[in-house]
Image 1 (cartoon, rainbow, N blue to C red):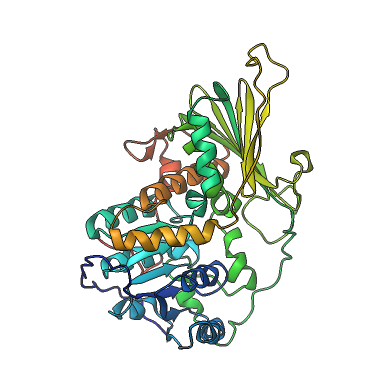
Image 2 (image 1 turned 135 degrees about the vertical axis):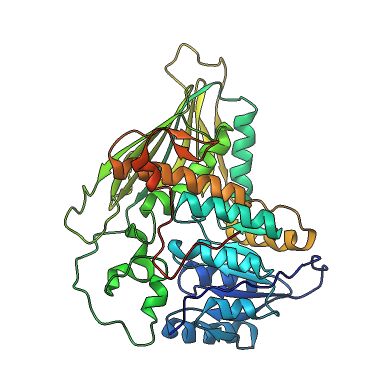
Length: 425
């Protein structure tokens, strides 16, 4: 059983890597997106996996065998991420733990002198986001957040088009994620911890709960103790570009509503249907998500962002972007024909990893640095807090707190189970 005492790691200064120097990565959290990230890293030249870490020994052994097939060399295996961080041969940490672990692993990795590729959302609370930004500034590490649209050219091209004013004044922005492939999660009883799993360490700073398979591995994201549901999972991708496109980032107020409308009696805690309206004063931003349907009214766009302008509406998703010209408005731009579909590369994750690896050599900011990741994670948490409170909330960005709202401000904080605690930065 791993202990929860958190020591201080020595700070190791990187001067950067030369063009042909080998980069050794260690992965913490080996299931799902973590392993997808690792395989993308290993497809790049001069990258080696030196270590894997997971609290599920079954996953760890399976992934170790796969890595050995890829690179011809078996990585070291750890069940405690702090032991991986003690390994001075590891240059880069890939942090793909559940959301409630992101802050601890990331801060300790930076403290240990490692550059960091961390999964989104950046953290499971606003307080953790702010502390992670503070840690990056203190330790001066290169941090890339896994919002890989930031490295995919067609997303940037669409934003450039918007910023040139080509669709006129924008009054409404809509972002959505309709997850038709996901169905109900049946309620199942608590059970014994599976062999090979250190469940107490998996819980870490989260509240003590009996083992339930619905709260473990992929489906952890539908429980407030560990994550923020679809708003935090997909919202950070899409809302990020909604804000980037408008070049405004701080709303005056947030009002969210929704519930378990599709599967009212299943095991999820987070809503399967939710809408959040962010008011910026001169435009509104709508987040809309559903589970169990794809949203036929948007055709094949089960996710995306739409900027509704005077002369046309720009619509973008991972496949590409287009502008549909306005047809029924007194402010139609004469002769404006819109923009036909501009297809994406389909290589967003690969380009994101390449950008990160280049930045650990140059020590420049990557395309989705920690401040970008922190801002959009906070933005998603604002929506979730409004939803959970069932009312409109008003945010003071300078003070990083809600205005005159003690109940909401309690939800800004990270509430850790002893003996785990937030690091001092």
